[in-house]
Image 1: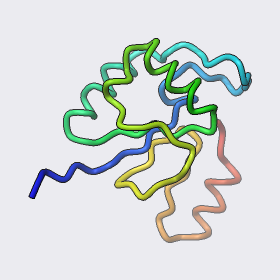
Image 2 (image 1 turned 90 degrees about the vertical axis):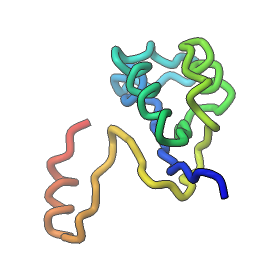
Image 3 (image 1 turned 30 degrees about the horizontal axis):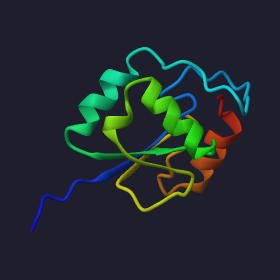
Image 4 (image 1 turned 45 degrees about the vertical axis):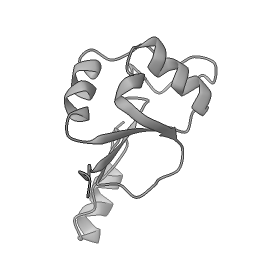
Length: 109
């Protein structure tokens, strides 16, 4: 039986790049400082999948151009089962709906 590595889905915009909320279909912002080192460290213990609503081919080209493609198993827009989802536009649900409502109301991107 081989080693089972947990999967982490990592969002592109705002997590790996300098996305500021101004979406352009034809332009993916530059890599964020520290992102490559972060991905390299994570890849030692986890299987990484890039999770983005962007065009998969464009996102893959971005990974290649930024020399991060070797650390990712795949690129997808589908929320597949994973150990963890890393996204700058997420709220972790703790089981308390009132707290979650407050977090939603107070959310700032």
